[in-house]
Structure formats: structure tokens, C-alpha cells
Length: 233
Image 1 (cartoon, rainbow, N blue to C red):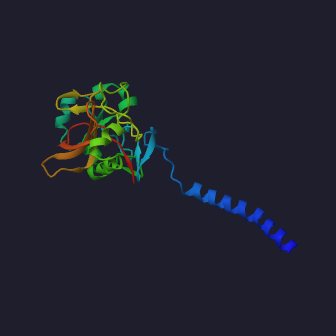
Image 2 (cartoon, rainbow, N blue to C red):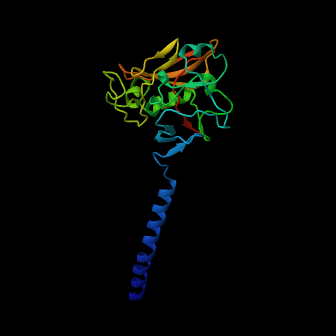
Image 3 (cartoon, one colour):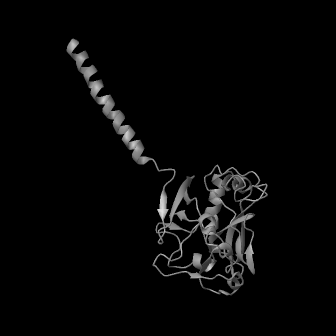
């Protein structure tokens, strides 16, 4: 009886820590990091965040080349954006390179849709359905915008309604390039979706506003310049 008791106690001292170590190791390996970084072909590095089952960049795209190394055309005259026809293009809002650090670059939909790839390898431009999934993960379109917008008034115009950025998405009001000018910086953040509308030369985009908490989906002509966020495959 004495030897059996000693044996059982010794077995517990050896086996229990080993099992605990194995469990902790498995848990650590199975966990997906809530955030990490990814680089584009130009070497720009972006922070990321997990929202539901999706992993998003927390910054707007800044790349100047497609994934095969071909340059994307830089069109600096906002009035020319309505005449790019089917050519992919980018520019800084207001042609101000300093804006690149905060708002990234603006791209037309032809750059978004180019088969050479705009997002880093393993990432893609989200469809409108994937944007809707993001909104659903944040309580629906009527509430998602506030949870996606950067809080405060550093970039957003007052009142930046209900902005908490609790999602970590850090949406910024990068405005628009096209329609004859540089528009809406500070008031609206707009990002392309990957899919076309059934109406003519239109494609989908989503937008956030300084004066409400919504994430809206709409469509516009493909020549317009919006910001881009990438979603992990």
C-alpha cells in the first residue's frame, strides 16, 4: 500500500506538469495573432487587425507598383481622372506626398481590378459582401462606422459622431480624387470594393462620414480615386 501511494504521488508530480505544458503549447500554436504586419512590393509595412474571422490592414494602401513590378500610372491632375478610361492610376490627395503617411494613396477602380494585383501577395481588395461582413461583425451598418473611425479630431472634422475605433480598423477621412478636383478630406473616408455594379461603368465602394456612425455602400464611376484597404485571403 505504501509503495503504491508513493508511486501514484510520483506519477502525478511527473505527468501533470507535462500535460500542462503540452496544453499550453497547443493553445499557443492554435491562437491567431490579433495583429501583425505585412509589406507591399515597395517595402511599405502595414499593421493589421483581426475583426471576426477577417484580418484587415489598419492603414490605407501606399503602393506605386503592381505585384509583378510594373508601375501604376501617377496622374497628378485631378481633372484628368475622369479621362483615364481603362488605365489604372494613383495619386496623392492634393498632390501632397506628406499626405501619404496618413491617408495613403488614391487609386481608380481600374488599378483595383488589374490582374497584376494591387494588394500584397496573400491579400486582396474586399468585395462589397466582405465589407458587409465586416459591418455585421461590428453590430450592423448602422453602428459599424463609429467603431471603425479613428476617434478624436486629429484627422476627422467635428463632430466625428460616435467615433470609438473599438474595432481597431482606424478609418481615416481620405476624401476623393476626381469629379474635377480633390474633395472631402477630413469629412469622408471612401474605399473601393472589388466588384462592379450592374449599372454601366460603375463599381462599388464603402464610405464613412464625420457626422454619423454608419458604414454605407454605394457605387460610382470607375475613374474616381478612392483609398484602398486590403483583406487577408
